[in-house]
Amino acid sequence: MRIGQGFDVHAFAEGRPLIIGGVTIPHARGLLGHSDADVLLHAVTDALLGAAGLGDIGRHFPDTDPTYRGADSRVLLRAAFAKVQAAGWRLGNLDATVHAQAPKIGPHASAMVANIAADLQVAPEVINIKAKTNEGLGYLGRQEGIAATVVALLFAVDA
Image (cartoon, rainbow, N blue to C red; front, side, top):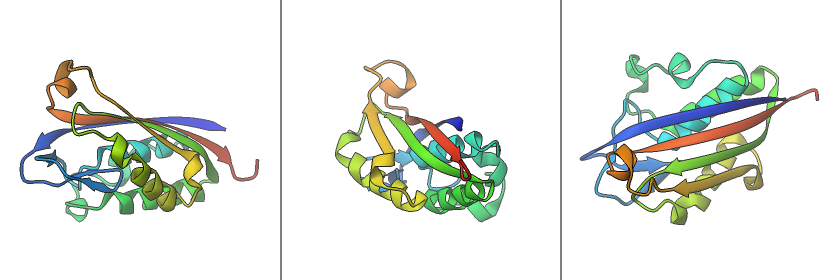
């Protein structure tokens, strides 16, 4: 059994769609990043890779590689999880928190769970997503960006 923790943060940017957990959320601004800047899926990917001892998202999908410019983070998540599985691990559960003053994440959480469960080929009950504001404090409270934290539990396939 192994535990991995993932974290990601992206600043808001004009003229980009806001994609979190593979869900396009109506909002005046999106997130800035080399790929689609899906802050939740990047944190999920890091948690899974970390739990398996396989490094992080930047090692496997570097932002210096033009191949990943505008990349769909769901595609990256599936590719990363295939590496986790190839290393002999299966997902026990995943617990995530999206930290955003705005927009409200709760109304979109079930669609995010469905996307992540589908990408990882697990039951939706294995995935949990929570949303928290920063109570107006710091860069998140000032609505300068969105962050996500994730914990993943992996079990050895032969266990």
